[in-house]
Amino acid sequence: MSSERTAHSDARPVRGRGPGRRSLLKAAGAMALGVPLAAAGSRSAYADEAPVDAIVVGAGYAGGTVARELSAAGLRTVVLEARDRIGGRVWTGTFAGQRVEIGGGWLGPEHHHVLNEFKRYGLTTVQDVAATRMVMPAASGFEEVDPVAAGAELSALNVRLYDGSERYFERPTEPLYRSDLLAEVDKLSMADRIGQLDLDPVRYKWLNGSAVLYSGGPSTRGALTSMAQWERLAAGRPELTTSLKPAQGMTALLKAMLGEAKAPVLFNSPVTRVVQQSRMVTVEVAGGRRYSAPVVVVAIPTNMWKTITFEPGLPQAHADATREGIGVPHGTKIWMQVRGDTDAVYAQGDERAPLLQLVPQQQLPDGSRLVIGFSGPSLNVSDRAQVQAALRAFLPKAQLVDYRAKDWGRDPYAQGAWGMRRPGQLLRQLPAVQQPHRRVVFAGGDIASGWHGAFIDGAIESGLLAARQVTALLG
Ligand SMILES: Cc1cc2nc3c(=O)[nH]c(=O)nc-3n(C[C@H](O)[C@H](O)[C@H](O)COP(=O)(O)OP(=O)(O)OC[C@H]3O[C@@H](n4cnc5c(N)ncnc54)[C@H](O)[C@@H]3O)c2cc1C
Image (cartoon, rainbow, N blue to C red):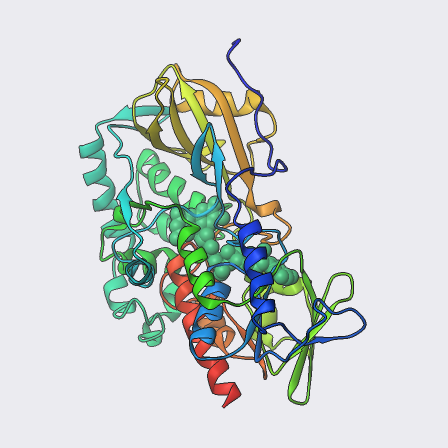
């Protein structure tokens, strides 16, 4: 097709909207205001050095929350960020001339931490595009279904799937409140639980396709208690969990938080070593720069902890969490510009489909439509023909004009996509992974109590807890 353009690859930088330049300038401004950090070792970032109270590693939502809270408490803080931008697994970029979310992008009405923050900074949400058609797995391939009837049937299936969760997650924001009831369920994978329902093959695919998507691999990987907790947190309306979008983009809130924090963010600073000695912690960045403070907050993905040398070594629960991983291994988000069939179609794959989900987005002035796809490991997103074929499995008349894919499993500073606990991780690792290791505090959406893993709400919740832990450590 002559109008086709070259597909974007993961490695291509996003132009135009990156927050990096502004935040770097902000960092320089903070230095001029006399809030630079203490640098130990041969190379220092600033000539004018002064001690900081805390170092935050990672400028995602968890780290940004910690920095904002500590600054509000009058503590001098610096943020060390491996990338050249803020946001981590949230990344507001561009595609087809539109602002798009390369990572996390949706919110729900039960995301109370996020919505409180939106209120604080005067930010707003908009409803996501509503699907008018729906494609679901059939006995063979996929078929178009009535969205209202299929929605009702999915709700009924979910009631069976999560039966008992109102008891074992009596308080959904405190997942261990009824830990006495969890022993039997926390060991179950989504595949185990779906298998217990004795479904016909098509309804099995309906439930298992969704479980495979969230598990970022086979549904044997994802824990029943992860999805059941999200369902309970959503007050039984999981479909609302992704019903909203931030009107100003997903990074806007984090920019506002870091703006209030006035903490310098030092980009291109991947931390490689964290050494605790008496009452100081020294952090080493690739290339040898070293910084010291009485407390360090590690606000990076759990999967990344294993890339840092901790002295003394991590406690057992932390070591297990990073070895096993909470960020799911496969999670590729693909923005597609589509012609030919431009209705707002929602589609769900089965466990073997190259595309596990299609979510319709806005129609463009030229009549084409943007669609988000999530793919599993079987789709090679650098092969345009494969992406086109995967799209046509759902929408046979659709033509792929252009696409941009981001494989978060291969991202060097995430090493996984959104988080979803594995079977047994809730009981084995919470609340231990939320506890400081002497003067090193941990934060991150992956280890939140409430909206853990797949939601920035959990990252903010975890950042708030970490900030309280820092204040307690500093006495
Ligand atoms: C494809 C995708 C879709 C998602 N969809 C949604 C959604 O719709 N809604 C939603 O709410 N959430 C969604 N999420 C989840 C959400 O993005 C995460 O839960 C959240 O961003 C986690 O925040 P965090 O601060 O804990 O970690 P991160 O965002 O990963 O931030 C950690 C930061 O640490 C930095 N870092 C890593 N290693 C080092 C190091 N060694 N030294 C220094 N810095 C380091 C990283 O570069 C990063 O900036 C999605 C995630 C993905 C990947």
